Image (cartoon, rainbow, N blue to C red):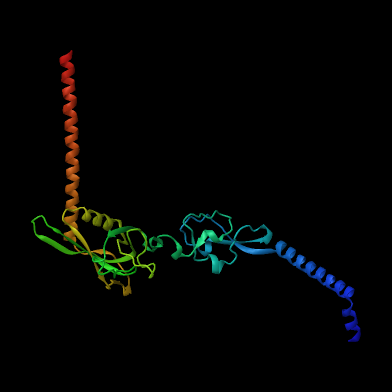
Amino acid sequence: MKKLKQILSNKNTVTFIGAILIVLVLYFFYNWKVNQATSPIRVPYAVQTIAPRTKITKDMIGYVDITQSSMKGNVLTNENTQILGMYTNVNSSIPSGSLFYAEQVVKEEELPDSFLLEMEDGQVAYNFSVNVTSTYGNSMYPGNYVDVYFKGIGDDGRLMIGKLVENVKILAVKDSGGRPVFETTSEERTPSQIIFGVTREIHLLLRTAEYIKNAEIILVPTNASLKVDGDEENIIAVTSETIKEYINSQAALLEDIVATDTEEDVDTNTDTNGDNTNTDQKTE
């Protein structure tokens, strides 16, 4: 112990030992960094081109061994926690053979208008203007179901009202600025439009109904769902063929008006050409 104390009391000796320790630390740290940079690691890459707004699945991912020194940017290295089940960003297309980067991949709820991904195959988005009153005091939420009623005046002048479409799932409720109404609780937002997905046939039917004079479309909340083969399945269906036929008949009338106007234009042009021809003949 005395000898050790004597050695440590010598400043030159302590300085020498400290210098050796620093050199050893630097040496081992340098070698660790070199090995880390040059040792290959296994990272995921895209085996096909992945378009924007696409859910990333297992069959889109492959693996390649590369060194850390060759990785530039914020490369994602964990398939399960960082990539699988995520979506490519709206402005990001991942080329085949490319690594995955953090700015290219987002969660589904982080996508702008991610509600569009909830539509079934063959459906299109339909937006319907609403206010606080028509949404029953702002009580219609995404995921709720509504029945669509039609109110209008029939050909006989009598009031026509009834359920037109049932079991429509609300995909989004937005304010006049296009912001989700229920996105935050710190700010009160007024509903301006409700968006849901319907078949192209029903979409055309509803759009046509909007343009019928003195007609009105009414949304009524419902918790009902139809069942098929014992399994609960939400099916959008037209429930009144009478109202459907009436709406379509009004669309046919509009087509007749357009056709009549076109014929009148043709007749007018023909008369004008005829007059010009007679004038030429008289001039001769």
